[in-house]
Amino acid sequence: MNSSGPEQLTDGFGRVHRDLRISVTDRCNFRCSYCMPAEGLDWLPRSDVLSYEEITRIARICVERFGFDGVRLTGGEPTLRADLPVLIEQLSALNVDLSLTTNGTTLRRLAPALVTAGLSRINISCDSLRADRFATVTRRDELAKVLDGIDAAIKAGLAPIKLNVVAMRGVNEDELVDFAEFGRTKGIVVRFIEFMPLDAQGDWTNEQVLTQDEIVAAINAVHPLEPLAERGNAPAERWKYRDGGGEIGVIASVTHAFCDSCDRVRLTADGMLRHCLFATRELDLRTLLRSDATDDDIADAIRAEVGAKWAGHQINQVHFIRPSRSMSQIGG
Image (cartoon, rainbow, N blue to C red; front, side, top):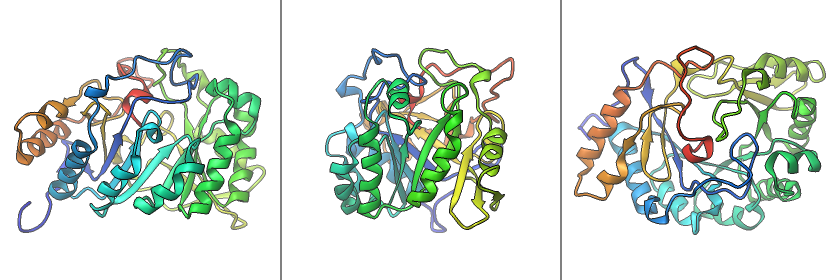
């Protein structure tokens, strides 16, 4: 670090990167139909997965050298990783905005320990409020545990709590208002996510995408909305209820791509740095970590990889190339 503070990690399009998404495991206790096949995937060998010390070293370099101020832990399902509060405590010492994305099934047991370790906010994924439909989508009859996990997160004092809902035509479009009302009742923010081409089976089609415009129109017809300030680098466009009943967000990666303001890089569970969720290339940081590479060596490699970041993913363009990994293998 120079005397004037961290340098800006900038790509060739002038975008400054300050947000690190870290997958701590590729394993998951769900088998969501839009994410992986019913039999699951071939899990990474334990020896290929970064240790907590290796993860923390990468995060520290991003914070100290490049001024990163946000770290989000993802999976697979991150709470399946043993002793996760240990990693939370290590990362919270970096004084960043530290968050976690989870399916919520373990929060009744883990939420207090996560808060004690330094976690302040959380995103919980849930794609249906109907038990039979939830079981169909996830191939697990676990809705009750997810709903209990939401209550446990509230009780533990995590805030804000955001509920992530993948909106899919022919699956859950009739629950948009139900989710909005659930969020209003619980005092949590519901974020709808357009279905993206990151399923392991490769079955995604554009016709399955429930668009941002459709989502907002459906909710606005029942609970009038008005837009909030521009999102800046955040992935979600936001609207507030005119009656003061909270807000919703929509991550419209397909129909309203926000690539021009993206400030995120991703670290997979096996130590590959990706400059985009849809990247077709990766930087092998695990080999550097397990060699005699210095922090300068690692910082140089990160700088070069982000410098090569493309303009955007170009979904729906003829030259779009699907990533070789699915969402659960990359980490949200």
